[in-house]
Image 1 (spheres, helix red, strand yellow):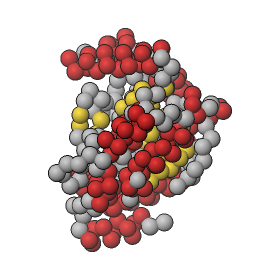
Image 2: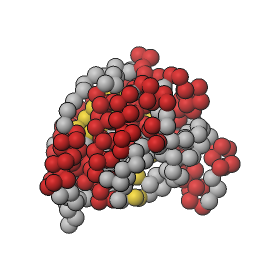
Image 3: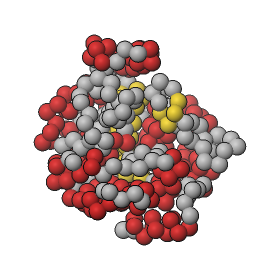
Image 4: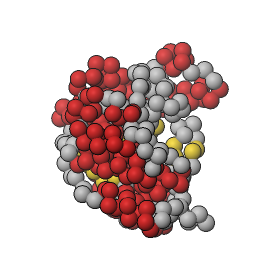
Length: 311
């Protein structure tokens, strides 16, 4: 685990926005919701997701997302920096949202986010961005926006198994087609040899390996094990609250205990598209969830993932 806690522009932890990131299915929604349980943060779900919803909402982020895993750095931040400054300052763009999204669902979401941003700003709350698609740009968020960045990393076998169960895959042209990303993180070029492969296990494992490499070399962020946090959530979240400059209160602890020690009949737990934010989180028994992480992969596939992701 990386424990660097510096943030951009010298912003103190108790005034900094928070970014929770990591590859999709690494626990970002869970961690984001648990951090917001203390009442000091306004939860903002996946502004960099290119799919609407939850992304492509200019009221939340008034900038055009062109790729999954959009790479943002100083060389292309002319549009991103002012847009994200508005987002983390909880300034909602009502007119921009109305011009773009007008369905009943969109209007309900506009009212929810617009109200949350306005009340949050007036009461001195901070923004919490839950965004897996920011994972390759985590350093920029820490350096230029002063975010306290928590980057979740899941065990590679559990990560790949989760993607397999959901039938997910990744299209590497989304990353290879970003020259600044390839320039700054040349390990992304490793993905080229699998760009046309139909082997979803190998593709997911390669994505995990490259992303982990990028995170390990990114200063100013906290890289956190999903499994370690799930195995002992109360002290783990207490440490994350301290890192993010959040108040750890008895009410926050009670909410976290209720959400992470939820007994149900399911074996995997924790995944459901729910609410206007479309967050993929529901109460779960976090210890039980990690025990079933490899479900869906054969022993041979799990061994192949281990071999591909070994440092």
